Image (cartoon, rainbow, N blue to C red; front, side, top):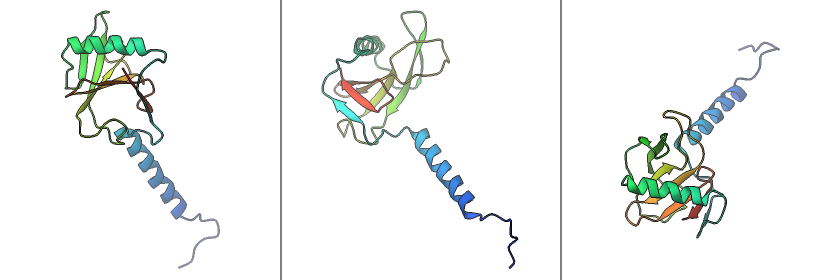
Length: 137
């Protein structure tokens, strides 16, 4: 078989497509970065906001189904449902749910601020950077 002089090899293009697909899948499942850190207390900025959000979610009984919930400021807040702890950063053997910290207009984009609650113990962690770090509240 004769290959034209200006033809480019097919395998680099194929490799790029496969790599792009893998990166997309990792982004979709929300894998916790390997460099994530877990801290025993929360003294950083926004910890008080996370504690307030925890108290409001607790008043709602920590809903387990994903969706929008009315918030005291007249806006809405979102819970994404179960947090799977895929990277094992939090104690294993527990069921966790994730909740947004900041309210907004219903349907607005989510930001990176979350709290994660252990369903059996109530232990709560604040993640200000979408599961890169966890601070115990």
